[in-house]
Image (cartoon, rainbow, N blue to C red; front, side, top):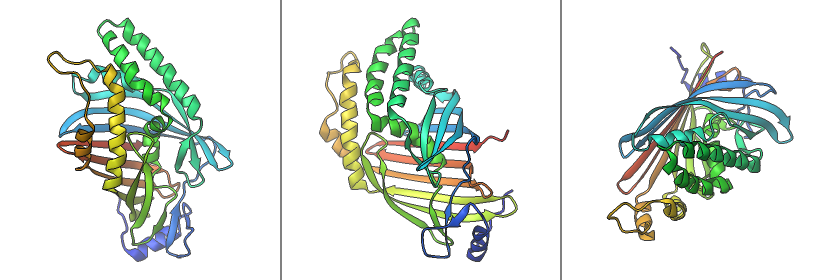
Amino acid sequence: MTVFKTTRRTLLALIGGLSVFRAARSASPETFTLVPKLAQGQVLRYRQDLHLVRNGVIGHRSRSTVTLEIRERIAAGWLARWTSSGVELLEADPRVRPMLEVLQALWDGVAIDLFLDEDGRVAGLADPAAVRALGAASLDRLVVLLVADPARAPMAGPLRAAMQPTLEDGGMLAQSLLKEPGILLGAMGRDYRVGQSLEVRTRIPSPMGSGEIPILGRYQVRGISSRDSRADIGWLMVVDRASAARTLGTEILDIVRRAEPARPTPAGEQAGGVSESTVTDAMATLDFDDRGDFIVDTATAWPVSVSHIRRVSASAGSRVDTVELTRLVE
């Protein structure tokens, strides 16, 4: 069992002796920055577990293997490649399972090139246009497969109509593909002060589109084990509710309106979309927070395991997304 040292004096001594915690940009002698030891050719693999709960009911659970490969040194940091493969849908609502299987296959085995900054954090897609082309090609292949299967052929048209706007919207596509890499490396490049929380006031990309949401986040080095070469870092984030409600409300309404033409109207139901007032009322009760736990190898600063939970609720609805990444040792 990992034993973490938690006293302020011990933490200061341990962090000061670790090469991955370099002196921070701050003038304080008790502040350090966590920076991974990056090198061309490094390959790290993680088991990725995704878990979605919607309104208290499991939406789906899936598992895959993700690989992060450091490709080369560039002027502003590093070029890396992220690949998710072997996606397995472990549990899903039977009504949506066929569609989930198709959607999860869209990026299975597709290599995505990323930019990492000097401190090891995800800075963006290396070539957004190439990624959009890869996504379009994958969607075309899936549509062909669906059409060839009589049981799934009816999904082909709605799937293309629903996915096409996302693939064409560079901001939304980037946020979708950068979510898990960003979570894995989220604790990198931060200035930690021994014995105190690190407050982060910034803006994050909206999970629904290309807008931004103001946040208040806190990181904290909770403990270090010299015996097991592990550091325990916690993360807690809340959003500016008013700004988030305005941004998400606009984006949700736009997504709904784009999807409406592809949505069949059930027998007995009157055709018509979601009203702006309905979305506004729901956003007035918006709550949105993140919590994370990072166990980091103190010899390299690479994450050993990461657990990230995002909770979003509005009106009577709620959604909890859990991402767990566990290092695979070869």
